Length: 594
Image (cartoon, rainbow, N blue to C red):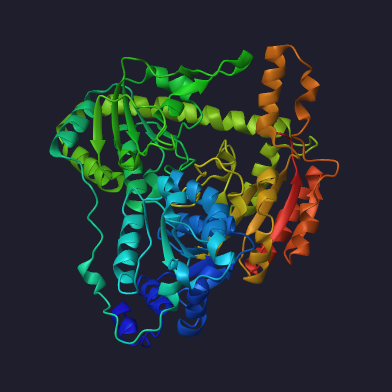
């Protein structure tokens, strides 16, 4: 049945919150993650008794932060938003970190909340006062694309349409809609006009001007050692495919920053992690959707307290920057990173820019023919370097194969082996992305990328959101889950069990918030103090958390802690069987610090 036919058959709304549900259905919002709250009780009733708890279906979460993180993960996997409902001021404050993560990650989440009644004469003593703000969206306005608080039922459709369109237009991001409880609970005495969504299309993507193509083509063909750095290109399949085509045409090495999965791991031109050996040779840098260019072209020097990055790129290299992230620069959070240097800056959507650039480049037949020998020489040079990286990783894994605690390289290798014949998706990984070299991903969206906000608690609920989005697709979802991050949102395991969300959760238990352990070691060395004290206030031990027992307490299949390397393969295979039966499974693995 078409969307128009479904809307024509919808029951007539009787209350304001019924109109909100009509909007959710019109935009085919599949799920809405909720933690119950009285300020959206009208909406809750409409979702169940008017909307039939279908399109959207409610997903109950034990904490508001999980509702937004789950929707964030869904957006990563599906490329479109789901909704989240949070309870007035208190729920919004709980959810704020997850909203910020979605903002930094440029992903659409429709966060909805209730408030009021705004009419003070209609409020109950105490509770309606401490749960009402003027204006509630102020709390998150600096890290959402838009917020609104419609003052009437008649204003709801326009508000929702604008919110959806803004959230899903690149650069994407979360939006916040606040529904006055009086608006939700208003009894309707007439028809509320329902707009035709065909009259409110999303804007066409932003393409580069002709000058951008002309200079980019000329500089790429002139360059002796061009290099590509990509971060968010893989958010669209067209960009992912065109990047591979462009790299192949000119034998350009690619460095993947993993904000999304941009380039096949096994491709001979994938030199991710080898920046120190390559960037100094580059005479042209094509930067694609990279907000943090400074971090991409430098190495960190933190010995003896020094923090300044050491540049790896030659100062004589030309830089072409293509992206849209400058459109979401705000004054409050400095998630816009250091000001980029560029010789040519192009405001364009890479998913339309790259296919056209590749098409035009293929048309330069004479120029490509003249450069054929140079291109093949480059291809041979970079392929050799790629092979060296692969050999070095293999040697590292073999040298640590039987070590205890289990080496992360063995964990990644074993995981790659049990997944090699599966249609898998990595929903969450480590901050370094080292596991990607052992998993051999090559398909669009096979790795959903690392999160950008830096706040803990993202991994587990976001992975559940991704697995929920891909439920029934035949894809095996895998969450490579840090233990410290797990503890922030561990109760989301209940949501996993209750809704039978098939997800393989591999907890990497190094029993430390280890990033800070490294910082404390640097401080101790710098100040001449005892290095052995670096573990105080950081280690997660005495007692060590039994994540498998924790999983079982929530109704999730669990095994571990796995401490013997020889037991790892069987534990992973047993867990995969559970996941393929349509249920979540957790494997707790005690691993080395890195």
